Image 1 (cartoon, one colour):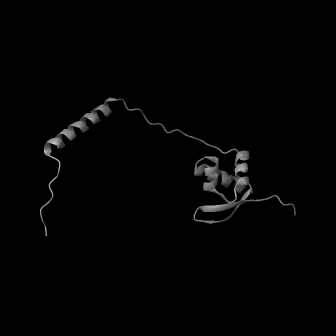
Image 2 (cartoon, rainbow, N blue to C red):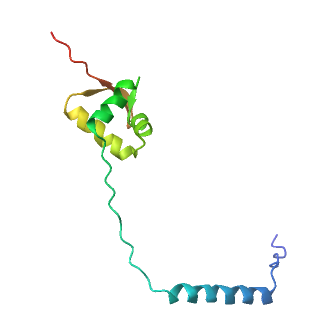
Image 3 (cartoon, rainbow, N blue to C red):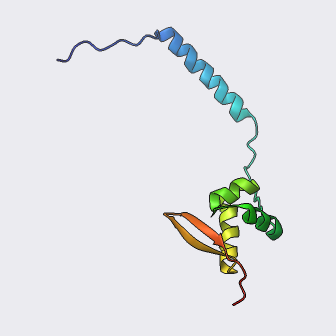
Length: 110
């Protein structure tokens, strides 16, 4: 049941050479001074007139569709649609599990 174990295909001499190369690479990397990484805050906003043009031409208004149309991240498109929903410009008409579908509310005079 136990059987013989497979022997490694690499010889001991080549292993020691690989270890030397990795040590040289590490010393080269540590020789350069470490620069502190700073996170950049990128704020991308959708102008309301540009967003309304995009929404007007869309058959089904979705967050992913708006992001693709305007070329922005989904989080930016989500914030834009949430703002429009708070202003009663669009309304949620369907969808499930985060994939919501919105409809533009037309200004009807009753």
